[in-house]
Length: 295
Figure 1 (cartoon, one colour):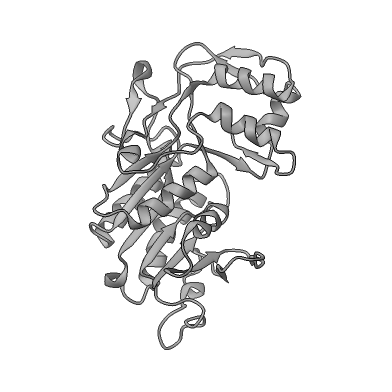
Figure 2 (tube, one colour):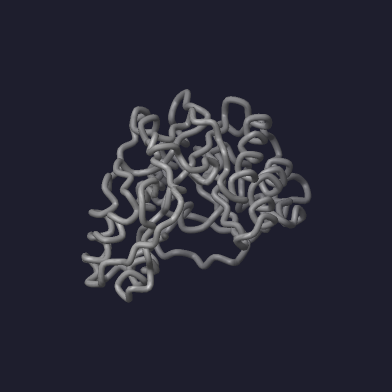
C-alpha cells in the first residue's frame, strides 16, 4: 500500500480520484476544513504550512497519526493565501521546508511531486519554445520562491523530487474568462510575442498521478497542452464561442512565452484536451458543470 500525502485543494482531489484505492491510501492537508466528498476515500486533515505546530502529525505526540500514516509519496500543490511575495514565499520554500521537517522519515519518501508554475520563466524571445532546459528567468515575484522550493526539494530528496510547472489551468468550477469575454470587459494584447498556454485541470491531475509512479523521472516537467495560441487569437475564438463581441486589442510590449510539453509527452503522458479551444467549448456546452477558466 502506497500512502500519499497531498497538500492543496482541487488539483489534489482530482489526482487522488485517479489512483486505485487498493494500492493508494490518500490523505490531504488543507488550511481550512474540507468537507468529506461523497464517494471519495480521501481523508482531509486541517493543517497550516505557516504553523509548524499544526504539522505535528507523527511520532509519540502526533495528533493524527492514525488518520495520517507516514507518507511514501507526496503531492505538494499549495495555494498561496494571497498574490503577494510573502504569501508565495510562505507557500513554497518555507512551507515545503516546514512539511519536510515534520515528516517522521524522509528516507521513506519514494517520490515527491511539487506543482509549480511556468512563472519561473520570463518572456520567450521571438516565439522560441520554452523547455525544461531553458534557463529560468522569473518574470515576476512568483517565480523566485518556486525556484527556491525546487532547490530545496532536490537537496532534501535527491533523485526523488519532481517539479511539474503548469501553464494556465482551466476546467470545472468558474467562468471568469468566459464571462468577461461575453460581456466585452476583457481586452487582448496586440502585436506579436503574446502567447496563451493552457492545460485542463483534469489533464494536470493525470500528469500528477503519472509522475508519482514514473520510473526514473527527470527532475522537472512542463505541464501544458499541445497548442499554445497567440493570446488575441484564443480570446477571439472564445469570445465567438461565448456569444460575445470580438475583444478589443491594445498594443503591449511582448511578454509571452511558448511552452513545450515534449518532455512530459515523451514520458508517456498525453492530454485528453490537446487544444484549449476544444476544452473550453466542451465546458461551455456542458451546462450541468460550470467551468474553471483562468486567465
